[in-house]
Image (cartoon, rainbow, N blue to C red):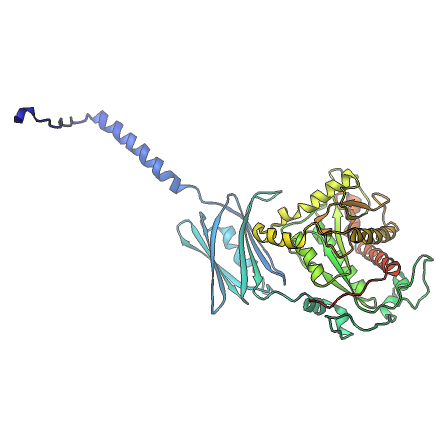
Length: 454
């Protein structure tokens, strides 16, 4: 082949200045298209919240996008390290430091810093070994995206021990909490005689009302599980005056707890005793762990119309709600887990073991008896929204072996009733009315013996 016949590449022609500008612009566009995704705006932390409790401490970061976080535990001393991607440190995030209180059961302090570009590191110095749960929640209600850290004690709390520790009755009497106690005869309490409203509760004092019945001597302690609704991330209904349902129902529950503990042979377990969230299935599980004889969930209703008013009492239904309003309310209360924030992975496992459709006809029958007794007493201090007990599929009432009711103490969405709910006198009256109903129920339905705790 001759040199002239060989195929050679054609020389590249020199570009004109205009051509060079065009190529540079095209190259610049291509370069920007590669770089821009890496320079995406960092997520913005909108709020930080801390909810300490003996059960667990929750830390919530509310933000405008879904965040990814990794975490690990460091020993000696105990620390929890969390790296959050796609985040730049801002003043809101730094504010987390001041939100850790000295009385937090699990966190000593937190350190916050920019670990590397687009990664913020949190280091929690811990008071004890914890089992952390880190998860995200999608926007719901008034919340945007949330990144949640739940710090549970590595050694789960003993519910019976906690019940004794928090019960005032334990100061006066010594009990072996596991088996039923031997015969404990009712004795008059001076505090009951000093309060004329409680005289009827003393078996040795003449009854004030003909229909009151004396409870026969009990062979064991009665355990009442009181469940103040909502809490923590879930405020419940909010009144026009700014009152939160979670606060007023906790106040009523604490008043009721104190009054029950003044009664012979009664003790109380609160599903929450502070401002923190307890998932619905855990409320049921807590009651079952202490072998509660009754479960009473306390709420303060809300409706779209401020004219709605009155108190109500609900029991579980297996056959559908007794009214459209009852169904609407049950659906709203059952959505509390979405607002309060539940770790779905754990929730599904717990739900399978606790909230299967195990409710029995006998449980619902006893719940209806309790509900009627309480409704009759509440009607003496406040107008009833409906004159009979209603039923619906409330998840929190599904303990298969515990008579369970849900009380809507009043409509917090009604300005007049909101004022009642925040009034000390009304809270006290409501607590006494519920206690009267409980006493009447036990007088007519003596509790059965319980097996030793397992």
